[in-house]
Image 1 (cartoon, rainbow, N blue to C red):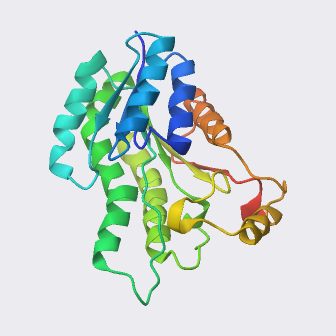
Image 2 (image 1 turned 90 degrees about the horizontal axis):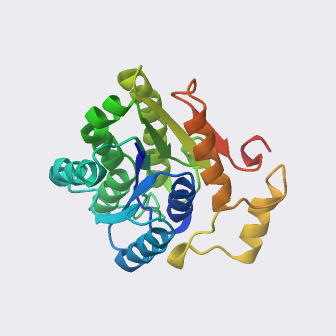
Length: 243
C-alpha cells in the first residue's frame, strides 16, 4: 500500500521541495499550511497532474492544539494510514532582548516546537501502526545562537532536544530524527540580508557555497532509508558549524 507523509509548512520553500521529493519517491503527500492557501493548492494540483489522487492540502494553525485530533483524523482518513510526519513549519523573525514580547515568545515556540510535539503525539498511534517515523526540521542556530534571534534559537534548541527525547519515548516502532539546515534559502521580507552579510555567511562555510532545498530533501531521504538511525540531528550546512 502507498505510504503517506504529512509535511507541515509544505507549500513553500524547503517544505515544498521536501513535498515534491517524497511524492517523486511514490508517497502520497498531505501538504499542511496556515496562510499559504494559493501555494498549497497550486502544489497539490501540480502533483495530482503527475499522479492522480496522490496529494491534498489541509490547513491548520499550529497554535490551536485543540484542533490537532481532528486534523490528524482527517489526514488518516484520506488514505487510511500515516507513515511519515515532517515537522517543517516555522516562524522566524528577530526578538531583541530589549523589545521581545510574550506574544512573540508564544508564536515562536508554538510554531517551532509546541505544535510539532503535539502533532507528533496525535499522529503517534498511526505511526506506530505503520512503524513510521518523524523528521523535525531544526536549525544550526539551535546550537550556535544567532544574534538578535534569542527566542527563535531557544525554540529550535527545544526542538532538537524533543527529537532526542521522543526517539526514546517512541521507540522501538517509531524513529524520530532531525535535520539542521545552514545557509539553504535566504530569509524573506523584513528578515532579508544584505549582500555583504550573505557573502560573509557563505565565506564561513567549509565548502564556500550555499546549499539548496534539494540538499535538505536528500537528507530526508537518507534518514528515511537508514532504519538504524534515531535520535539524531543531521547537520546540512556545508561545514559552517565546524568552520
